[in-house]
Image (cartoon, rainbow, N blue to C red; front, side):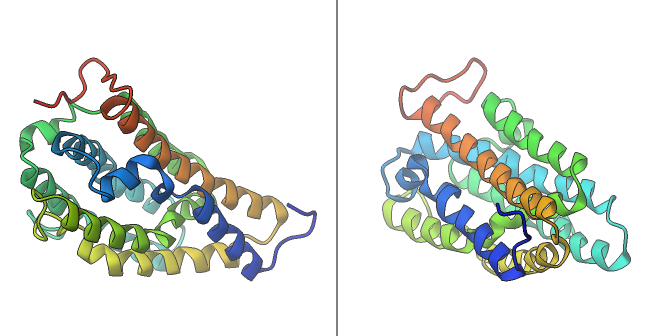
Length: 243
Protein backbone atom coordinates (compact mmCIF):
# COMPACT_ATOMS: atom_id res chain seq x y z
CA UNK A 1 0.00 0.00 0.00
CA UNK A 2 0.98 3.65 -0.38
CA UNK A 3 2.01 5.84 2.52
CA UNK A 4 -1.33 7.66 2.42
CA UNK A 5 -4.61 6.05 3.50
CA UNK A 6 -7.02 4.83 0.88
CA UNK A 7 -10.39 6.48 0.53
CA UNK A 8 -13.27 4.36 1.86
CA UNK A 9 -14.25 3.57 -1.72
CA UNK A 10 -10.71 2.52 -2.66
CA UNK A 11 -10.49 0.38 0.48
CA UNK A 12 -13.71 -1.39 -0.49
CA UNK A 13 -12.32 -1.97 -3.99
CA UNK A 14 -9.15 -3.47 -2.49
CA UNK A 15 -11.19 -5.79 -0.28
CA UNK A 16 -13.35 -6.91 -3.18
CA UNK A 17 -10.24 -7.58 -5.24
CA UNK A 18 -9.09 -10.01 -2.56
CA UNK A 19 -12.30 -11.96 -3.09
CA UNK A 20 -11.81 -11.93 -6.86
CA UNK A 21 -8.33 -13.42 -6.43
CA UNK A 22 -8.51 -15.56 -3.29
CA UNK A 23 -12.07 -16.64 -2.50
CA UNK A 24 -12.54 -20.39 -2.45
CA UNK A 25 -14.99 -20.45 -5.34
CA UNK A 26 -11.79 -20.56 -7.41
CA UNK A 27 -10.54 -23.75 -5.75
CA UNK A 28 -10.48 -26.91 -7.93
CA UNK A 29 -12.37 -28.89 -5.27
CA UNK A 30 -15.13 -26.30 -5.23
CA UNK A 31 -15.42 -26.43 -8.99
CA UNK A 32 -15.49 -30.21 -8.94
CA UNK A 33 -18.16 -30.20 -6.22
CA UNK A 34 -20.47 -27.92 -8.13
CA UNK A 35 -19.67 -29.39 -11.52
CA UNK A 36 -20.82 -32.90 -10.61
CA UNK A 37 -17.32 -34.36 -10.76
CA UNK A 38 -17.30 -35.82 -7.24
CA UNK A 39 -18.82 -39.07 -6.05
CA UNK A 40 -21.17 -39.29 -3.09
CA UNK A 41 -18.42 -40.23 -0.63
CA UNK A 42 -16.42 -37.15 -1.61
CA UNK A 43 -19.49 -34.94 -1.14
CA UNK A 44 -20.04 -36.60 2.24
CA UNK A 45 -16.46 -35.76 3.24
CA UNK A 46 -17.01 -32.12 2.28
CA UNK A 47 -20.26 -31.84 4.24
CA UNK A 48 -18.85 -33.56 7.31
CA UNK A 49 -15.75 -31.35 7.47
CA UNK A 50 -17.66 -28.18 6.66
CA UNK A 51 -19.96 -28.97 9.60
CA UNK A 52 -17.15 -28.09 11.99
CA UNK A 53 -16.82 -24.66 10.39
CA UNK A 54 -20.58 -24.10 10.60
CA UNK A 55 -20.74 -25.28 14.21
CA UNK A 56 -17.90 -23.00 15.32
CA UNK A 57 -19.19 -19.84 13.64
CA UNK A 58 -21.52 -18.92 16.56
CA UNK A 59 -18.68 -19.63 19.00
CA UNK A 60 -16.47 -17.29 16.99
CA UNK A 61 -19.20 -14.66 17.03
CA UNK A 62 -19.72 -15.10 20.77
CA UNK A 63 -16.01 -14.46 21.33
CA UNK A 64 -16.29 -11.21 19.41
CA UNK A 65 -19.62 -10.29 21.00
CA UNK A 66 -18.01 -10.34 24.45
CA UNK A 67 -15.43 -7.82 23.28
CA UNK A 68 -17.73 -5.30 21.60
CA UNK A 69 -17.92 -2.03 23.53
CA UNK A 70 -21.42 -0.75 22.75
CA UNK A 71 -25.00 -1.97 22.99
CA UNK A 72 -25.57 -1.18 19.34
CA UNK A 73 -22.65 -3.29 18.17
CA UNK A 74 -23.56 -6.19 20.44
CA UNK A 75 -27.17 -6.10 19.29
CA UNK A 76 -26.07 -6.21 15.66
CA UNK A 77 -23.60 -9.05 16.17
CA UNK A 78 -25.97 -11.10 18.32
CA UNK A 79 -28.16 -11.73 15.29
CA UNK A 80 -25.40 -13.77 13.74
CA UNK A 81 -25.38 -16.16 16.67
CA UNK A 82 -29.15 -16.52 16.51
CA UNK A 83 -28.95 -17.18 12.76
CA UNK A 84 -26.68 -20.17 13.33
CA UNK A 85 -27.81 -21.49 16.72
CA UNK A 86 -31.50 -20.83 16.15
CA UNK A 87 -34.01 -19.66 18.72
CA UNK A 88 -35.07 -23.17 19.73
CA UNK A 89 -34.02 -26.78 19.06
CA UNK A 90 -34.13 -27.76 15.40
CA UNK A 91 -33.83 -24.21 14.08
CA UNK A 92 -30.91 -22.20 12.78
CA UNK A 93 -28.06 -22.80 10.39
CA UNK A 94 -26.37 -25.60 12.30
CA UNK A 95 -29.59 -27.61 12.42
CA UNK A 96 -30.09 -27.07 8.70
CA UNK A 97 -26.53 -28.23 8.01
CA UNK A 98 -27.21 -31.41 9.94
CA UNK A 99 -30.20 -32.01 7.67
CA UNK A 100 -27.73 -31.82 4.80
CA UNK A 101 -25.46 -34.45 6.35
CA UNK A 102 -28.55 -36.54 7.19
CA UNK A 103 -29.64 -36.35 3.57
CA UNK A 104 -26.22 -37.52 2.45
CA UNK A 105 -26.56 -40.64 4.59
CA UNK A 106 -24.11 -39.68 7.34
CA UNK A 107 -24.88 -40.74 10.89
CA UNK A 108 -25.74 -37.60 12.86
CA UNK A 109 -24.03 -38.74 16.05
CA UNK A 110 -20.88 -39.38 14.08
CA UNK A 111 -20.99 -35.96 12.45
CA UNK A 112 -21.55 -34.17 15.76
CA UNK A 113 -18.82 -36.20 17.47
CA UNK A 114 -16.24 -34.59 15.13
CA UNK A 115 -14.34 -37.89 15.11
CA UNK A 116 -13.99 -37.93 11.33
CA UNK A 117 -12.56 -34.46 10.86
CA UNK A 118 -9.44 -33.91 8.83
CA UNK A 119 -6.68 -32.43 11.01
CA UNK A 120 -6.40 -29.42 8.71
CA UNK A 121 -10.10 -28.70 9.12
CA UNK A 122 -9.76 -28.56 12.89
CA UNK A 123 -6.58 -26.49 12.78
CA UNK A 124 -7.95 -23.99 10.25
CA UNK A 125 -11.27 -23.43 11.98
CA UNK A 126 -9.69 -23.20 15.42
CA UNK A 127 -7.17 -20.69 14.04
CA UNK A 128 -10.08 -18.54 12.85
CA UNK A 129 -11.74 -18.58 16.26
CA UNK A 130 -8.43 -17.68 17.93
CA UNK A 131 -7.84 -14.90 15.40
CA UNK A 132 -11.16 -13.26 16.26
CA UNK A 133 -10.37 -13.46 19.96
CA UNK A 134 -6.82 -12.17 19.76
CA UNK A 135 -6.76 -9.52 17.03
CA UNK A 136 -8.30 -6.06 17.20
CA UNK A 137 -12.06 -5.69 16.92
CA UNK A 138 -11.53 -4.01 13.56
CA UNK A 139 -9.56 -6.99 12.25
CA UNK A 140 -12.05 -9.46 13.70
CA UNK A 141 -14.94 -7.75 11.93
CA UNK A 142 -12.95 -7.47 8.70
CA UNK A 143 -12.28 -11.21 8.73
CA UNK A 144 -16.02 -11.80 8.31
CA UNK A 145 -16.05 -9.99 4.98
CA UNK A 146 -15.83 -13.21 2.98
CA UNK A 147 -19.62 -12.90 3.27
CA UNK A 148 -19.35 -10.24 0.58
CA UNK A 149 -18.67 -13.03 -1.88
CA UNK A 150 -20.86 -15.81 -0.51
CA UNK A 151 -24.15 -15.11 -2.38
CA UNK A 152 -22.42 -15.94 -5.65
CA UNK A 153 -20.93 -19.17 -4.36
CA UNK A 154 -24.25 -20.17 -2.76
CA UNK A 155 -26.10 -19.73 -6.05
CA UNK A 156 -23.46 -21.77 -7.86
CA UNK A 157 -23.52 -24.45 -5.18
CA UNK A 158 -27.29 -24.92 -5.08
CA UNK A 159 -27.87 -24.90 -8.83
CA UNK A 160 -24.83 -27.03 -9.59
CA UNK A 161 -25.48 -29.68 -6.96
CA UNK A 162 -29.18 -29.97 -7.77
CA UNK A 163 -28.35 -30.33 -11.45
CA UNK A 164 -25.51 -32.81 -11.10
CA UNK A 165 -26.28 -35.14 -8.17
CA UNK A 166 -29.33 -37.37 -7.96
CA UNK A 167 -28.77 -37.80 -4.19
CA UNK A 168 -29.19 -34.02 -3.57
CA UNK A 169 -32.60 -32.37 -3.15
CA UNK A 170 -33.82 -28.86 -2.43
CA UNK A 171 -34.68 -29.99 1.10
CA UNK A 172 -31.14 -31.29 1.58
CA UNK A 173 -29.77 -27.87 0.62
CA UNK A 174 -32.18 -25.90 2.81
CA UNK A 175 -29.26 -24.43 4.76
CA UNK A 176 -28.40 -22.11 1.92
CA UNK A 177 -31.71 -20.34 1.26
CA UNK A 178 -31.66 -18.06 4.34
CA UNK A 179 -27.99 -17.29 3.76
CA UNK A 180 -28.88 -15.50 0.52
CA UNK A 181 -30.41 -12.72 2.65
CA UNK A 182 -28.44 -13.12 5.89
CA UNK A 183 -24.99 -12.90 4.32
CA UNK A 184 -25.59 -9.62 2.42
CA UNK A 185 -27.15 -8.06 5.52
CA UNK A 186 -24.18 -9.06 7.64
CA UNK A 187 -21.55 -8.08 5.09
CA UNK A 188 -23.16 -4.68 4.49
CA UNK A 189 -22.82 -3.91 8.20
CA UNK A 190 -19.26 -5.21 8.46
CA UNK A 191 -18.14 -3.39 5.33
CA UNK A 192 -19.62 -0.10 6.56
CA UNK A 193 -17.88 -0.57 9.91
CA UNK A 194 -14.52 -1.28 8.31
CA UNK A 195 -14.76 1.64 5.87
CA UNK A 196 -15.59 3.99 8.73
CA UNK A 197 -13.00 2.79 11.25
CA UNK A 198 -10.00 1.79 9.10
CA UNK A 199 -8.62 5.28 8.64
CA UNK A 200 -4.84 4.93 8.86
CA UNK A 201 -2.52 3.07 6.54
CA UNK A 202 -1.75 0.60 9.33
CA UNK A 203 -5.43 -0.05 10.05
CA UNK A 204 -6.21 -0.53 6.37
CA UNK A 205 -3.33 -2.94 5.93
CA UNK A 206 -4.58 -4.85 8.96
CA UNK A 207 -8.12 -5.27 7.61
CA UNK A 208 -6.80 -6.31 4.20
CA UNK A 209 -4.57 -8.91 5.86
CA UNK A 210 -7.51 -10.09 8.00
CA UNK A 211 -9.59 -10.80 4.91
CA UNK A 212 -6.65 -12.55 3.25
CA UNK A 213 -6.29 -14.70 6.37
CA UNK A 214 -9.96 -15.69 6.30
CA UNK A 215 -9.73 -16.59 2.61
CA UNK A 216 -6.73 -18.76 3.47
CA UNK A 217 -8.74 -20.55 6.17
CA UNK A 218 -11.42 -21.52 3.66
CA UNK A 219 -8.91 -22.37 0.93
CA UNK A 220 -6.86 -24.63 3.21
CA UNK A 221 -9.96 -26.60 4.15
CA UNK A 222 -10.59 -27.39 0.48
CA UNK A 223 -6.90 -28.17 -0.05
CA UNK A 224 -7.15 -30.83 2.66
CA UNK A 225 -10.32 -32.33 1.19
CA UNK A 226 -8.79 -32.43 -2.28
CA UNK A 227 -5.57 -34.07 -1.05
CA UNK A 228 -7.37 -36.61 1.14
CA UNK A 229 -10.37 -37.60 -0.97
CA UNK A 230 -9.53 -36.77 -4.60
CA UNK A 231 -5.79 -36.91 -5.41
CA UNK A 232 -3.59 -38.48 -4.22
CA UNK A 233 -6.32 -39.72 -1.85
CA UNK A 234 -4.24 -40.01 1.30
CA UNK A 235 -6.72 -39.95 4.17
CA UNK A 236 -5.10 -39.22 7.55
CA UNK A 237 -5.50 -41.81 10.33
CA UNK A 238 -8.81 -41.43 12.14
CA UNK A 239 -10.44 -39.25 9.50
CA UNK A 240 -13.67 -40.16 7.71
CA UNK A 241 -13.28 -43.28 5.62
CA UNK A 242 -15.86 -43.66 2.82
CA UNK A 243 -17.62 -47.00 2.99
